[in-house]
Length: 310
Image (cartoon, helix red, strand yellow):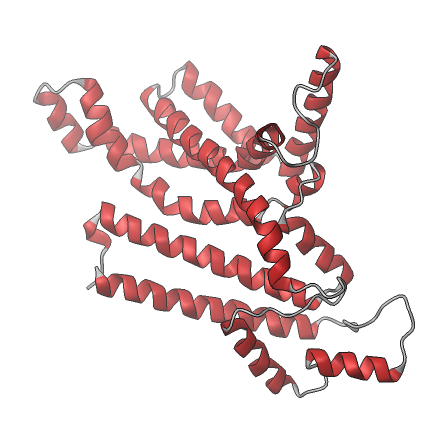
């Protein structure tokens, strides 16, 4: 298990280095001046800014400085937000995105496993047909459509009761989180339902399931001990990337519902060519995704010792 763990960690470090390198050179390949602003500045001020951010040095030296700062956990200072470090932006706004993402993944994970198992048990019957039709709808429709529909539904609900049953936008209470988390997790719910269904169908027709039935074991015991336990393993492998994707991919939902998460600042940084924020958040997102994948690999190795590599 130790060798397996060390290999996964080494692979993760290499992946993060590749993400950081690709991001650095991609930002330097983008045309334009990162210090350009609507206000005219003198050459002396521009030179001081270039020296402060290391833009007056050769590209190779800039790259080494960038890697050194990244290893030390310093992503620099925002070009557009005065005297504000990228680390502070991440620390302040990522917990908001993480809270929303965790709630969304809990809802989507439990729903996906439940609906997937249900469709497999009732294969080709009415519950299966209805749920799979909803799954196709959930996969096909973009998240911004669900976000708009969800917000319109909240408006209609509040108008019907002539009171604020659930807030339409904003952040700060559990009520603010419910609909955004549901909207954010719909795509993942649909994906996990399909994955769980296909995995469950394989388990239902397996030899050891038939053997357990032939021994006279109760159906409930067979379902929980033999079918659900083994069918959920493929779902576990995608939970980690799904957590990272939901947590870091709620740009549209955060914008529609006016949630002050890190995704909104990433979009603003792209619009304003704020290179330090773009590079810092991209590397942070990539590292977070890699960590979640490693954690899931380790959990999977504990659940199924066959995947461990000596």
